[in-house]
Image (cartoon, rainbow, N blue to C red):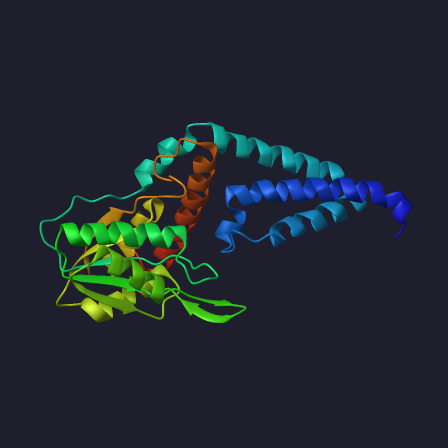
Amino acid sequence: MNLAKHGPAAGYGALLGALGAALLRDLGAVYVAGNAGSTRWIWVGFVVGALLAIAARVAVVAWMDVAIALLWVVVAYSPLMAHLAPSWARQDPLPPNVDALMSLSGGLKSDSALSADGIDRLLTGLELAKALHVPELVTSRAVARTAAGRITSDADQRRMIALAEFPGHWDIVFPVRTTRDEALRAARLLLPARAHLIVVTSPLHTRRACATFERVGFIVTCRVALAHEYDTRHPETPSDRLASFREYVYERLGMVKYRYEGWVGR
């Protein structure tokens, strides 16, 4: 390869590719792929842009960037998500009595602390469980592997439950990797005796999650967890709108998959 000939074009293409990849990451491309925080996405764009430039296709990369940037601007600075997100979130009226409440899990930090989503879900669940005198709280065990070894969500969940002074019984279901797993494990634990369940999860996850629990036999009351990082249900800032778009696309695609598998109703 003649670096003197192709070097400048490759560098220009690489920068354009990295820019497009960064914008796609903001829009949720890697979120949908299950690796939202990965910087490898940027490196992929960097390499692809360079290769296309070497192949005299730098204009293709530039026009792709323009299209992606226009979509980014529409999502971040228009009221699009303010219209779409509230109608997708499911918030049911609170019943007078329930048998149990399940707070769905989130991710883990490397020090075994719960992710923002996990904290939001558990805090909202504990508040509801205490206010409604729910006799049983159920959580699922999140597991991750770090350089120091295997970690779980148990310790941080236990700390939060103790601080809230929850007086009822606490159960953990595991192993789980998906919402479907959580529903099946909860069904084995609670059904048929304790069928009326409050399910607490992130706003745009509520529709798919609660439909999944209903599919396995629960009578579900769906409740939205309050958000401390991004307000995806009523987004008013560019960062909130982008986060809302990421989750909305992910949940729409997730619902298609769950319907295809028969894990939710048609």
